[in-house]
Image (tube, rainbow, N blue to C red; front, side):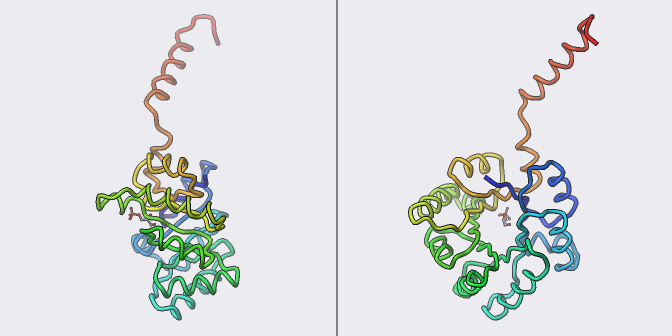
Length: 216
Ligand code: G3P
C-alpha cells in the first residue's frame, strides 16, 4: 500500500519525504487556505519536493469551471492529480479528463454507489473519507472494504485512496482491506513509528552494552 501525506505544508512534506517512505501528497482547499500562499506556486513547490502524485483540488463547482481549473492545475507539473468533487459535474469532467489521460482524484466519497460512478468515469483515485464517516457514528472502514470488493469484482483500475485518516489503526485497516493508498496527516505518520516495546528494548540494548566491561 502506498503512503501519501495529507497536507499542503511544505515543512511537513519535506520532513516526511526525508524518511524515504513517502509516495505522494494530497491537498484540499482547507489545507491550502492554512498556508496563506499563492495556490499554484504552492502546488509547484510541492511537486518539486515529491516526485509522486500530488492531488490539487478545483474550487469551481460547475463543469465548465472545473474543467478550466483542472487543466490549469494539470499544467503546473506532470505529477499533478486533479481533485474533483463527486457531483454530477465532477463525474462529467472526470470522464473527459480520463479520455485525455489527465490523472484525477474524486473526493468526498461517502458511499459505494458514488465509488461505482467514479470507477465508471475512469478516475485514477477515489477518496473515501473514513474519519468523517466515523464522526457520524458509522463505520468508515466498512465503506473502504465495500469499494475494494466492488472494484476487485469488476477489475476496475481506479485506486482506492483512503482519506480523512485520524489514527494509526485507520492505516492498518486500510492495508488489511486491500486499499491502494492511505493519505495520512504528519502527526499520524509519526505515530506509525511508535511502539513502547521498541523504546524499552532499545534502552536495554544500549545500557547492556554500556555496562559490559570488556566490550568496546
Ligand atoms: O484531504 C481530505 C481529508 O483527508 C480530510 O480529512 O480529517 O478533515 O476529515 P479530515
